[in-house]
Amino acid sequence: MTTSTISVDELTTDERRAELYATRDVARLFGLPESRLRYWAQTGFIRPSQRLGERALYDFRDLIAVKVAKELLAAGLSLQRVRRSLDALRIKLPGVSAPLARLRIRCEHDTVIVDESEHAFEAATGQVLLNFAVDALRQEAAKVLTLPIPDRSGDDEAGAGAPSDAYEWFLHGTELEGEWDGVDPEEPAFAAARAAYERALELDPGLAAAYTNLGSLLAAAGDLDGARDCYDQALHFDPDQPEAQGNLAALALRAGDPETAIAGYRQLLRGAPENLEAHYGLARALLEVGSRGPALAHLDRFCRGVDRLAAEDRDASLLERRGHAEIVASALRRELSGS
Image (cartoon, rainbow, N blue to C red):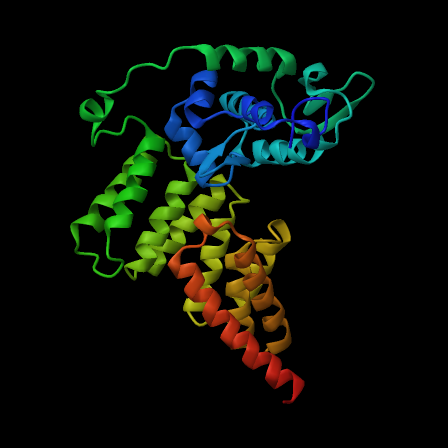
């Protein structure tokens, strides 16, 4: 993906790098905490879309998405409506014929509009004033890249163990959860992670991802009712969040209700057709009710999806499940072919 009037193939490596921005740079440009950008990336709200070696980087279209999201959220739009606007922008911007520098993004009545030189298209719904020239954003981004980097060598010492906002408490909770063995809820790491998520929700009661992670923590400890309540809360604030949808379906399967799980996973796949966890869970639920052919199809989708992931995104647990899925899929193929 490029952000100029020439094709990607015509860009040199140095020119492509000039259009890429680190998380630190994006945070400085928009006055956002880096922790919020990491949170958005982790939850799939806005992810850096480019890679340079092992580094995930934002391109200029990503900057447009961050600016739109920041302004719409600050104006009070729900996360669900902002997500719809961003999805529309992701689909439409790559097909825009005019150079990005000529675009203006604005709000007209209740619709986010992207103006080209000759016509305009609707992005998604909104109810706030949003009006900025894309070329001005490019100029601001260029200025930020030339600014000296603040000396924060003492930040780690001064701020260690002291998250300052809901997003940082959420990220702190994920770190603490990673230290838990996943078995004993009496372990200090479990209590610390739970307290971090609860603190995040005190500071931002609408932080859907914190409800989801807290629910998963409770589910792992055996508190299924508490987990279900957390997932319901997550979906109240972010109805399209795939993690909470998938986790509710997984709870139904765990509780011996495969039919409800099947309905939940199918609903998730309608909005996120490439969700690997949904394909894997749906295959398990279908096997529970004896639906072998459809189960095989979803196992194959899961395996192919894992194989397409970048190496750094395939952890040991995912690869182990991929191995089990292939074994079951092979057995199903033999059974269905009668051999």
